[in-house]
Image 1 (tube, rainbow, N blue to C red):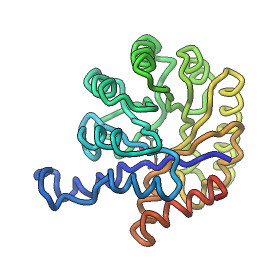
Image 2: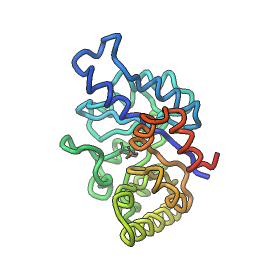
Image 3: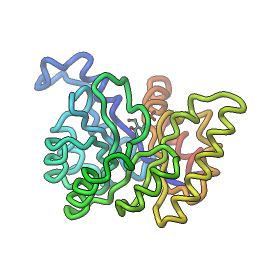
Length: 245
Ligand code: PXP
């Protein structure tokens, strides 16, 4: 069975909504690190956090503290800018997931264009791997992107499930089929397969059909459900769905 990584960005989103101007306030809450520890206890095999260039949710100190305090593994999601790469090299996360980043977007839109920026990616992937991180590339399930990921010698791809999650009826079936074919090609190319984005308690079960799927990274839906049932319970419910336990 695949395992569950919990993305805690939206815990930080809530904190920043009130405490952006007074980050040192003793009242600043909720704490994404505390949330990560609850998610681990509830069965998450890893914690994902995205340090965005605009620092709209996760802050630098969150990342360093997560690295120090969580006991599973830190999956640092990040764009390709030099200053973020420098921070990653200092944090030394277990895993890095490289994503496209655009300041205007509400959340990550579309996969990384690996085929179109092989040169820059080669530099970043090698530096991160030399620092001990396993690298995952967040891509759409397209053949040329998968081949580029293999050429870059990334350990993993994270298949972008957003189009599947947003589609309905026959379109959703088509998107699922694309993901299954993409996962199979990734395996054939020697890549390991994770997936995520837009997954929730209703659309996740079908994704488990992806060949070789190792890990799902899920954030918004779990944090949303936590408002009603608490974070421990929300993570447990998703773990049951994903990992059957
Ligand atoms: N994986 C990647 C690469 C992402 O960018 C995101 C969103 O930050 C997620 C997974 C989690 O997406 P969601 O919050 O929609 O579950």
